Figure (cartoon, rainbow over the protein chains, first blue to last red):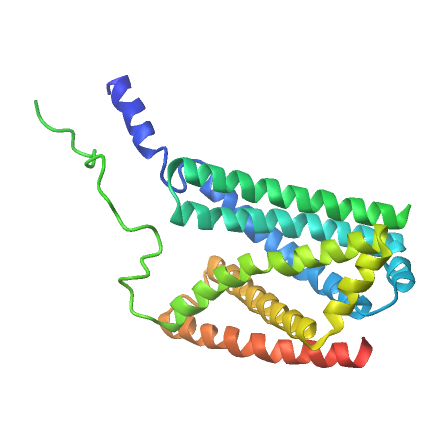
Length: 126
Length: 136
């Protein structure tokens, strides 16, 4: 087979969904989904109970190192799961540069939220 | 020169992946769309939680305001809606895990699980609300 034919086929395929890492992406969503089924109910319960408490009580609750590390872990897995899920929406409804920009902003925003969440927890614990 | 067998015309306008305009509305479709909507909408409570937490850490007046806002009837309604989205997404994820393990592949089961998701999310939301009334 002509090498140019191969390159052309690759280029043609380049902008299609699932062009390179669809299986790894899907497997990550499954693994993080199972992890989140255990993590999120605990953190949501703690938050639900804490809503409406005084600031001192809230600082005491999330100042507990076990609660803080559990919350940190949950935030990280949740937001990476979210970013990968939202990426699928971009891949379904957008094309070309707009799609690339959307995926960039989805991940940048998710990572930024992780950073802010960890900062808040760090400030409360230490 | 013969045309290459497998290369499609380069620029044909095809409909994008979820062909919403050509499918008939079905339970399987509705529940799938709602998994997508709830999954993306759930960024809202995550962001609210992070802002609430940061405010608690650094700025008392902001925290008191956000904390108060969340305990008004409107705030609690929003949180209850978030709880519904969460449980729907939870059951939707569970369905995907079951599907991917090779179970419930027939149409009847698919339809049935769709109803389980809508009714189950509603029941679980009511239970969540009651639990929060009891302990919160």
